[in-house]
Length: 349
Image (cartoon, rainbow, N blue to C red; front, side):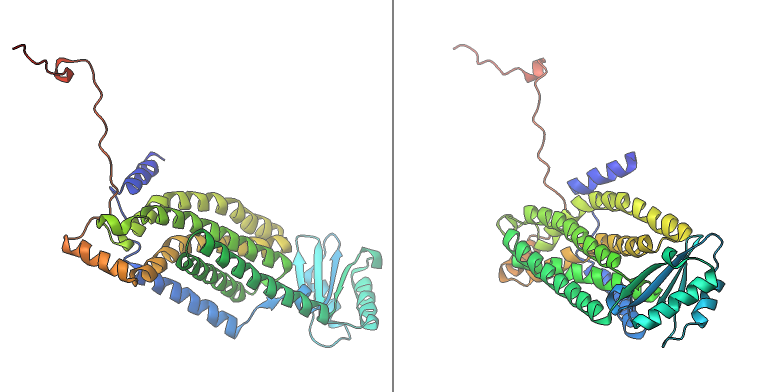
């Protein structure tokens, strides 16, 4: 802990510095690889929409000692179009999902489940969702996401500046694409819990980016007046001053989410927890990465194209450049009362 604390102090003062902004091409390449994988997964496999979005029927049977073979045997006897999906939830639950059914088909499926598992029909948790309702929910989720992004961009443009707002939105889109792509890659169902997770990571990513941008704004407020640092150097110092805080916050946030994902969902088989925790775990990690390695370098690239910043870069280069360090004011001398600190007395004429 002492080592991390010392590192944080050296990064804040500029004694130690990671050249993050100037190495932007390296971070862009890493992000491009993950984005290509995510887009490829979306194109090839696509998202596995849950029952709430595509419509269909879901039957959950709770019985001690139930096996997935019993669920498959029941599904084989369904006289319905399409295939049924059988999943085991925990130790004593089986969930069977089908496509959209007519009332007669739904009753026939219930009768088969009652006969196969030997349970009363009242103990079966049945959920029926029509395809039109699922389509309407999907549209509302997309509209809500677009409205959220527009509202955030407007707010950031008012509080900070338009280029900071654009960089923040680029980081958010980066996070969502990678998270959704990994979701498609692993084949998890997209449920309302997944949408909640996506909205949560949007807020977390923006929060982390806004904290970094606030320090960037502080360091670059009078950057053209002092001619000591370029905009990229001042922005890089801001990133270094906030990197330890971002890492600590992310680790603390990832620990409980990881526990939910690997213990709750992996061992207990909780479906809703699995959908939510996977989106949160991936999104929190990617959001931390983008707030440090994507948003500030992208912002610096936009600002360095301005004539004023180009003129500043020429002045800094003419002076021989400047290391990315912070200005540390010397401490005032404290009088100890010794002879050296006593003012000299003028002699009498």
